[in-house]
Length: 197
Image 1 (tube, rainbow, N blue to C red):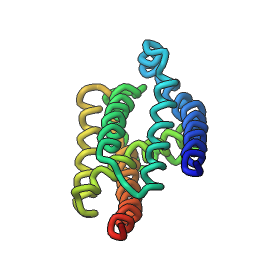
Image 2 (tube, rainbow, N blue to C red):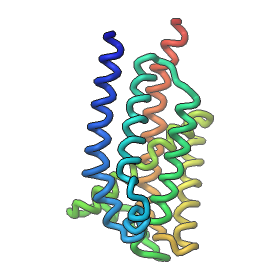
Image 3 (spheres, rainbow, N blue to C red):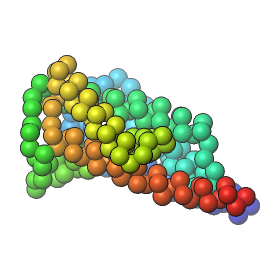
Image 4 (spheres, one colour):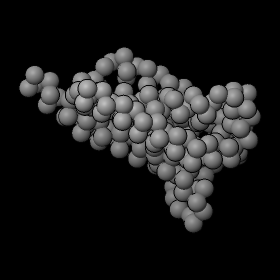
């Protein structure tokens, strides 16, 4: 009974965090891009989907953390949706097309929107760093992450989908490294339990 209450409370907390994150961070950011606003207008349930997806992701993540067992199915589902959403964000949000920004610190401004966008550029790539950690060492992760991000930036520029920006490469790379580090800590948590059971 205690576990049911604990998991129920975890579900409520996951919902509240997801709702806050979607309404106060995700939607204001997405709505500042006309193309994404038009895409979201075609799907009236976008907000509900994002909240439910994040709630389920956080809740199932907590359940697995609590049980110290990782389900590959959970990983496949979360990463499938994550990669789809990452693709949408990377290739449909730009206001400026076919431009180049060689200032790696152009996000350091007093503008709240620019700083939020920079933070999200880090957050977007944290799961990717965790994914690379599954089969790659730290050095390999750095190389793979930089090549992947460089490829994305080149595609955005070449196909008029956005700006080639050194700041994006830096922020996305930092996100991958954070993901690698977080997965290293999380993996230790799960490994400890499997050895003792």
